[in-house]
Length: 214
Ligand code: FE
Ligand code: FE
Image (cartoon, rainbow, N blue to C red; front, side):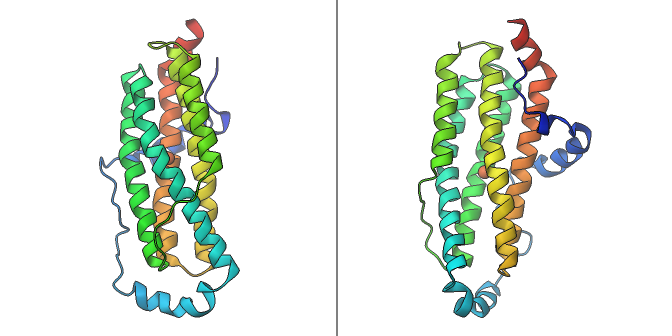
């Protein structure tokens, strides 16, 4: 049973470097290197036209959507860790739980930069993906590599959803001239990509073959 997505499995060697680069620190920085004291001044240049624009409102709504998604994911990942058998997979879930907490904090910084109150708006996609992950746990036996392979499948679907979301939102931020917001979203995007690749590596190292043999 090949559960790992082909798209993520192809560029393993190039990816290894980037994964190592982006995930090497145990506790990722919540803030980009340069935190702005000038952010308010910069933003005030945008507030007139940008803040009232329909696109700005749409952008903020989508930030609320991913904020909801991250807040629910951070609760689901420990359950996925508990359900995992392989210590490598459990460690990957653990690491990404800590990163996800930082993703939430970064989104709170994004709200502040946009002069908006942090608010979560239900993300139907993440709700569905997490329901699916629950279903995988229900449908598989504890202590099996089939379950671990399934958990990786569920987790990679989540990561791909996040990669799509952050990739587009950071482009929107760039288009609107929100460079600090763009930088924050880029940091998270890099960690989502690294997580996806790390999950591929864990799957390919042993779990998929062991699942086939069960
Ligand atoms: Fe995330
Ligand atoms: Fe993630």
